[in-house]
Length: 377
Image 1 (spheres, rainbow, N blue to C red):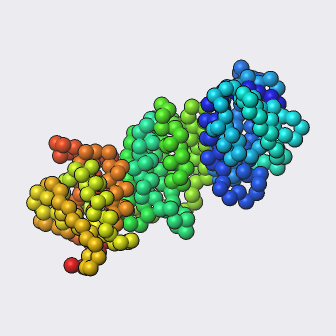
Image 2 (cartoon, rainbow, N blue to C red):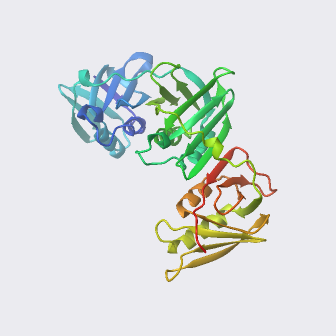
Image 3 (spheres, one colour):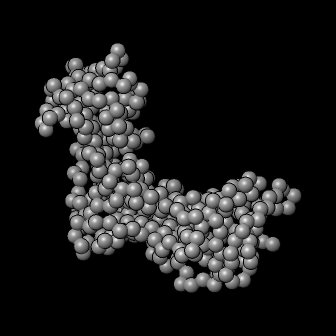
């Protein structure tokens, strides 16, 4: 096996497959990247990784002198590829070692037995395609509400709902709920599917494919092993779906509200950051909404305290709500509009955050529901 490939192309491909490698692999073989070289179609190199849950694969053009396959440490190869000089990179197999040469730099890597490596899953049939930038933005808006607590595996995922041309993403960690709706191009007009995908998988896809034009989404047919796949720009990834019944989160959305406040997003973010400097761990930031203003307060008793006043509009009676500042900032940070509209019923009922424009219209495609923290006066 021997081939020559552009340094940047190799670094990009290795980085893509290495990001799926487990931090603590149960077996050393799962820390490897599988590299295949083929003279067909003008020469191509294929890199792949798989840990029995997530797979990643990338194809790159190369000048292939001799085809073949090799298995080497993925993390080490990724680190080497990032630091090589901007010159063509050659990789050749010499016995049980892989020799990487770039300019005057040479690395000799130990190989692992190919027969011990698991077979990569096949990419399922495509169910549709979505505009990459819109999808990346949607994932970022929803993933903030997915928990990172692995003891609640269902809530570490994002529920994907597909109904014809409508694609909806939902996530909750029990304290907040995020829902994003967008349109896409289904493979069949009457497609109706749901999938519970790991949030970290979707975030990786959003980061890697956000600059491309379209992301192709694949799902296995009902009754088979539940796998989701994403493909774009010569790269793809698959992941096992999370097994289980996701909570009926839409029931958390109140049917109506009696108070509405509108505030500038950027100003509110900066104010929350400032006043929360004096908030002890797990203590809230209070916001008092009254006619024409919002007053933020943090800190109580003999502790340090902070207060700030912002311009705001209010429809309905004065109300005081208190939020976890971290959850509040995460929701505001992905709002995507210059203004935010808070829909409220009381200081203890969930508050709905929606992006708003200068003319007062709200963005109906994104909802962030946050449960206030109870406080005593």
